[in-house]
Image 1 (cartoon, rainbow, N blue to C red):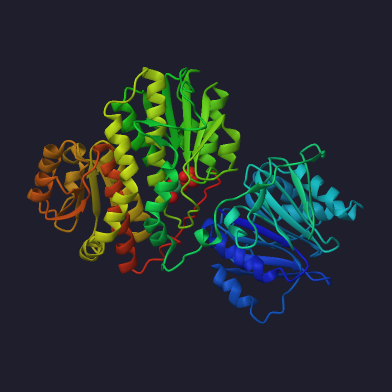
Image 2 (tube, protein in one colour; image 1 turned 180 degrees about the vertical axis):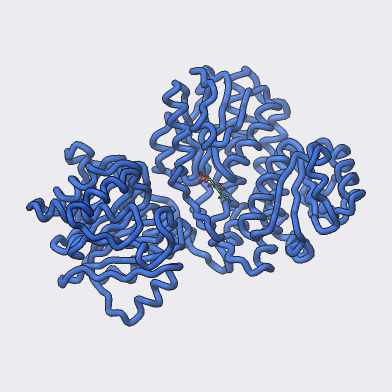
Length: 603
Ligand code: F6R
């Protein structure tokens, strides 16, 4: 949802800015641009399209400068054109600004600025900012005062970075959109997300809402919303630069699917202790006051919530999953003994943050279940529990889903013990199986025939996914993954619902993927027969031991037999591979599906 970055050093910034933009491209790829300062005014290069277009335009352009800002865009105001690409400048071209977020009062600010003689060159909400700064500079303010005065006029959410031709510094601020500083040896950085500068430094400072940062080559200064100088902790990020690269893989998505054994090991490391869980953040009794759990989330994270809900229900914990956007718009009754868990990989999804805010306003306790330390959700909730999956760059979430569910298994055990006073039924077998999950995922990755299945079915007219309980959550997730990267029609259904309507869509050209978690196998086998009777081909996705389903299906993708609560995670890995290979066969841009971006910071 737009990525911004900046570098201030003593050597040319342009190459490293473009590298940072490549690392941020998962946030948007409609256009990209940089502005650098080279002592003789600002130099700007920007292009519609991916960062590769900008890179090509940069070659031989002679654009160099040791202070610079950059932007990669996911369009909100105005189509993806060269004119609407950031950075945006004032009338005189002395001030350049990059922005992530939405300036909600831009129309009225623009009208007033135009009435005062300013000329706008783009359709964006962002362009009001350089013009506001320009007015203050003309009135005699220094760069920092002018920047502060300009942002005081803005409503909405924004992370902004500004370059002024008279200053050797970058000015930046955030309110409601993420922004993190990178503290390097020879240069300082800032970006919407850490992977942008991971190659250059792993020492970071997370800004708070309202902070204004001024970065120079060898120093930085932060003031809070009231203008008082503040000290924010410098933290070491334990992600390696290679974690954020593609490595030997053609796509981030494939790399991240294959990283799941490692990411799951990280997720559970130190959290399993024989037949108990250890969550250092939440000792026994942490949830004694909780009577019910609400999960709020979007997209894949919502499906992880549904998965968790189906498990929690078996463990006598009252849990319900809500689409965050709906929860924020129409909050249900949230009694004070409700724990509201925001499941969000990025920790920055605006809909989820709004739902958490609504829950907090209603007096609920909030918990962020997230991958990103220092994210807004982690900082704003009462508590945070990290899924520890490592950086996920592919727009389609994969490894974070399995880590979310594995974390929910641990969290559920803790909550169930606190709420009911006893361990969950079958806990020892489930926790043993959780310890073995990384190996089981490895086995799936080594033996999967998903590429062949995908080749047979990629071109068919519709793709349906069915399951019950946790496998229903995975049916929805598999359909989302399939549609978002193949652009083919795909839907997930509760297996029992098929005969109540969707069966009308089934033909010989609509493969149905029937996902079995080991429970209710006979019923699922009946649903398979119902599909086949209408001519629909069925791919069973099930444990090796599910003979009834394997016999009923036309072809099978098997997974190791394990605890039924965890089987659907393995089935999901098979279906991630099916989606990936189908998209590859269809020639889709897998890591950059059209119209989408990874971190959705607008409601
Ligand atoms: C789909 C996908 C999205 C995200 C959703 C929530 O592959 O990645 O549906 O799951 O935008 O994002 P987070 O988890 O960052 O809140």
